[in-house]
Length: 158
Image 1 (cartoon, helix red, strand yellow):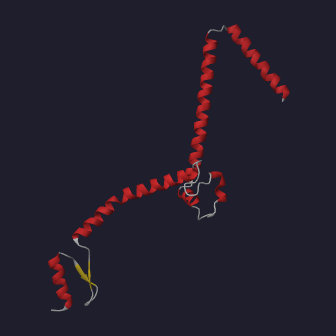
Image 2: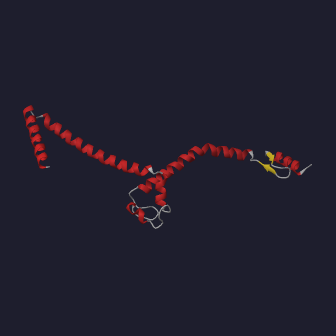
Image 3: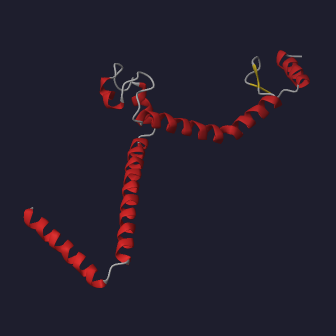
């Protein structure tokens, strides 16, 4: 019996699958348990990828936040003053993970600001509607004429 045959007999008794790469150096492939573990890992890969993507987004969000750097405590305005420089600066590296995050943060802040202004204007409009509910048509026309005169006066001063 050759060494290869002995090895194959031993591997079969252990429940392993054998594929010799040559007569003298057989290659043992993964056991059933290892194959099951690999299959489980492959099944979890989409979840792992989703977590990596979320982690990148969170790191980029921190990098673009208005707070100090979590690595060196420099404020965002002083990125250029980082001793490590780019690309060694960790905050700058984090910001490159998701470049769109900075624009998203700025856009969200602007939307919140404009939403607050719209709500304030809405309250003013509601107050005007309440005021004009009790006003006669003649009084309404007087107010409109007065507003037109103010607009004309402003136009002449500009």
